[in-house]
Image (cartoon, rainbow over all chains, first blue to last red; front, top):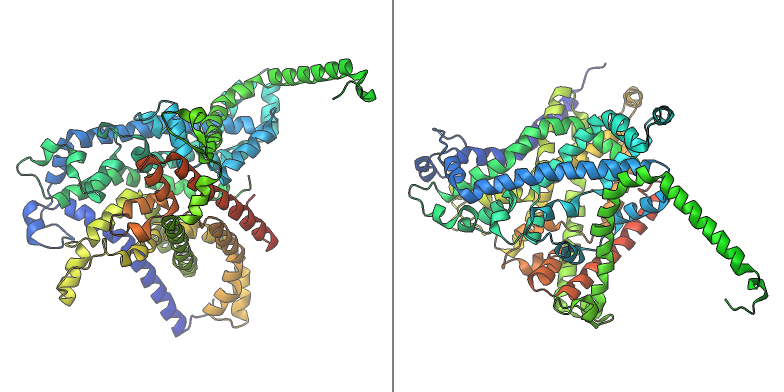
Length: 291
Length: 324
């Protein structure tokens, strides 16, 4: 390899520095929020900007976790995420397998699934169906209307189509029907890819706020993202945390409470992020395969 | 068919048996595939109930639907609601907002991942590259509520940004980033860049991973500097990816990102920030003007369908693969 010229070296250094700066700009806001959420009342009032609290305290966290409605919203979100992801995986994998076999009506079903990627009825007709099926104000409204992501369905079908045909033939020779082939052979073989889909579906549920606003009128059923919106965007902490709670003596400043809530809503994402990262390059590649 | 038709005189019996046997074959096939159909049943039910029944519900756009009278009892309205779309100055404004936000995103947010991917591709240290990637992908996984919550905390009157401006430049009045409509669109674009630019590099980096390193060696032999290598080797390698993604984005100009915009809207910026999707929400859910909101949604969906299909055809024509 020949020596780099002085000019090229400068470009390299500038590139390294600039990318480092961009990465910092991505992290800094988040770091700041975390830092302030741990700052004490006194420090928060005395210093305008806190990048590193001198003293780390948990009072903001103690405060929000003492709020019944906040804790309930975390519970709702955990419940929706766990049940929702299970429903997503069950519906997506079974239908994907059916669509991967030469089943009666396969072409029609594929065309109808693909069409939903291009066109949807829109918010109002879907809202009315959710209402008609009795899901309004139920956490199932956050699960059933998004039970299958058509794009994921197509990618998973592609995965089953790519399985060697001999596997299927051998199992049928041994007298297995399609249910057994799916359960005993295809499902165990697709565990790694199911794990990837599970992560993406789980993140979708955890971060979902709009369906909550659309379908849930009762604050007791709100997931954490809707509570967070109520606290920060709408600026009504009393409906989010409970009106009695807001009047507590020694309540920490609203800002540190908001930031603690942001951190609580984000930590699960940070926890699964390393696992997500392992999968997503692969997932995106799979996605670029034509359906 | 008339009984006087000579062809039909002897055929009913034959046709009957033919159709009976076709029905028989169909039944046999259903029975043969029963396990697969049973397995697919939840999925089929989902698509029917939550994807296709709502499409039948688009009928509401053509009647004056009232929840009390039900769909059958409501009066036929024809194209009335669609005509209103083009007469109501409010919707013309909303349409303009949607398109202008979309095109601003294409102009300013679309190129950022390309530049980032090129910069990442020039890094020599693979470890450093991986660290930077890990950090810049992260915001994609944060929810819009969190992103906009952080943004509000930073930009409000006594937020960090205004405090810093006060300390450094002695600003007397805080800048009303969140309430002055002039800041609305730049804010939307910057948030999209912050959240999605890193994630957007993935497809470009994947295309770049496939470039034969010998091309660069040959170019160096020929005396090409860094920028000429980028211009003649790296950029051509991702050109088709850029074209396909750009065309697809153009197919989605009617979508300006309602999850984000809904959170940013307030009475101050409603006029210039309200987009089609949020408008449908406020009209339909907020004011229960179901039929009109459905018509606006259908209008948006139909235009979107035509745009995506033409965009795809265009991508194919330009030598790309298209998506469908």
